[in-house]
Length: 321
Ligand code: FUB
Image (cartoon, rainbow, N blue to C red; front, side):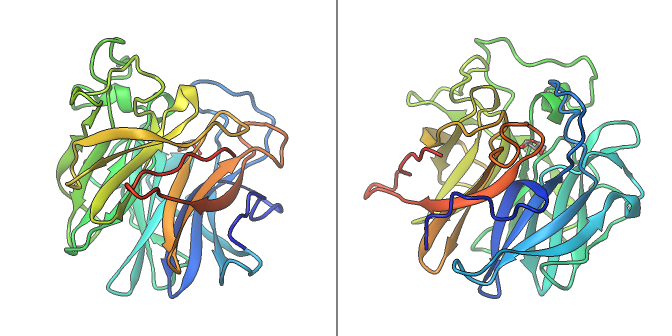
């Protein structure tokens, strides 16, 4: 049963699925959308999430299990609101949950919480990761044992407000013919709770080796970074936001540059599109969300998956939802 394409769970709204394989099971780390009636805006104020529920699948035939509340913002001293898209990795038997949220000054930061079990409960560090900013953390555990964090999101994710290196509440996107603002990367310290150095801009290049332009909305980075390796290459994938595509670029280093390759998924029902890519028992899967359960209400989403295939040249075959 490879093709899923129906919501994994329907008793709660879930979004932004980061799928990981631990102990031969698939764990899904989603956002937990709340069904309020507030209006949508470009700041993402409608995404008012307060906690995380970890989902799991014993195998692809099994019912999806909701393992209950794994972390709530009331237990995190630095958070004021909006627990957005998380990710989780395992190192030396400990599970590290990375999550974005607004601090007490309304600035998005990345926090980390630790557990002995993949489904939690997780205990958050008392402060956010020093030097972190913006949203949507995704972690690469590379084959040489190094760990990297990727993140960043425009508009509600505030990435364009950090162009000068510090937070500028009036900071805007670059002009259409200038390079895109682009995503961020940093190696994580051995303790997985600190950055090694500072977050660096990642370059995504077009077919001529030029950095993508801010006005190239079909291809430029908006939010939702993910990275995986296939046949020794780094595949960096992301959402184009305003044009609603999931796209990818490839490269030879975890720091990039990455060269744009094409689309993974055409637009889904709902404004946001967000994903992860995971290998399980020799096949590859795309986890994503849409708004099927709510009939298109942007902040009431549900997670799904489908099989992802590469062609003989390593190109991802574009999928329609
Ligand atoms: O879930 C809130 C935000 O919506 C995420 O951080 C973005 O990637 C988008 O899916």
